[in-house]
Length: 225
Image 1 (cartoon, helix red, strand yellow):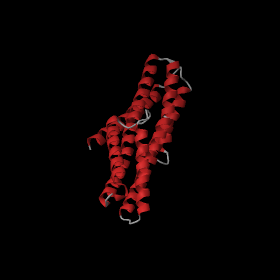
Image 2 (tube, one colour):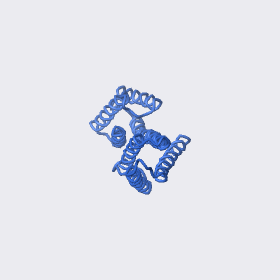
Image 3 (cartoon, rainbow, N blue to C red):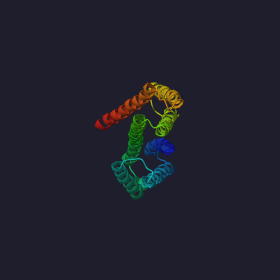
Image 4 (cartoon, rainbow, N blue to C red):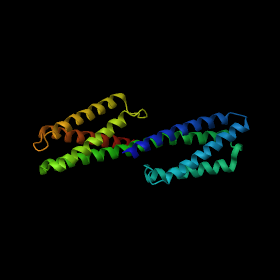
């Protein structure tokens, strides 16, 4: 889960740098200063070389199709920069800036979609584990399932309250409340694990299922756009 949080941070940083370099390219497009033009295209070229390197990392969360398209864009950026250099036209500079801005938005959206799918699956799995442990009346399995579910909700709460998170304030508040509710119910069930409060446990399971369904529904809607 920490790896996922790190990937979000990386995506946020890449998006900001892409936007920053896009602005530098747009400024250079209108400038007669050769040094300013050279610095703008040099920094942008180095950025795309770094992006290309990160795409080859096994830890990269982006889908294969997105990676493939980014590799093509990296090749285009390198070709245009190396072949024309500071002799690029205004339209060339604007084209590179537009690529940066579009990819900045795309990177963030792709990471969020993958995150939604991962969280939905994790919530569903925890709900299934809790259900199985309940049906078996197995205290050991239930304790493990409760612990895993608790860790997942602590992660969700941490993610929701992250300063870099773009989740609307109302949704953040709801997720935080749900995480606190799950924590309360976990303690309640865990205190008497050999004589489980079935109502409290069912409530936790239903919470997971509902949030999982909501995340998957939003992801499907985004894919249809």
